[in-house]
Amino acid sequence: MPLRLIFMGTPDFAVPTLIELAAHGHDIAAVYTRAPKPAGRGMKLQATPVEQEARRLGIPVLTPSTLKTPEAEAEFRAHNADAAVVVAYGMILPKNILDTLKFGCFNLHASLLPRWRGAAPINRAIMAGDKESGVMVMKMDVGLDTGDVAMAERLPVTDAMTAQDLHDALAPLGADLMVRAMGALERGKLQLTRQSEQGVTYAAKIDKLEAKIDWTKSAHDVLRHCHGLSPFPGAWFELALEGEQVRIKVLRCELAKGSGKPGELLDDQLTFACGEGAIRIIELQRAGKQPMKAIDFLRGTPLKPPAHVVMS
Image (cartoon, rainbow, N blue to C red; front, top):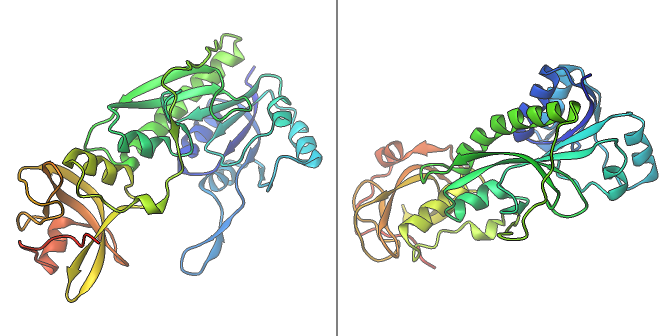
């Protein structure tokens, strides 16, 4: 018998899992997601990607502001679900919700736990220079990503990967993993393993204050910093252009030959010196402009040494 599930998720990352669970015949009783928020130039209320997909699939959608009230618990219980699947929902599930369902609540987490528990595992894995990432299905408890792990899939992380690249690779991988986990749960074959207490790290939410590039770091560290924050919020620096300081976000870059003072422009191809080595910018975004290739930027704004970034 297919499981009767509650699905809880919000961003694009969660959508493939919702689609795959529905496609594999599970009865999704309800979808919980965050309430619509104003977005775009007109600041119209925009439903989350998960809500949009749920409505396309004809699944009832709920957007409670809290799950901590007796009313929210009663509504959750009334779905008579076997289990809940949680993917980047963005709201804490209290113990009474976790304990409501027959089989419990299962979270898809975008890291190899116990490494990168918390809010921003994809960004932090790239920023830290990790060579491997992955997804895990975990049975939730009241801790922060501390529950027992059921299944995992691993994925190599290269220096060329941005946070968006890794996100886009892990989302379908995670959807397939959760479908397999729910299939095993349905058959009574899902095995759980306690997380190790060794190697625990926390993926703190990205703060915009950490987005400014520190050119005194090594080229590899600068590259991973830029890629870990791409496309949002975007690692940035400032250049003096046309008599003003212009903020530029680095969306994609590569290691390059050369050396010089940190932040010094080394050639006419947007190669900048770091504390050790250099990087060449491949894609960027000027403040208030659309993302563009470096070659297109240089057509309109030719830059040559001895230019350098504003280091203040």
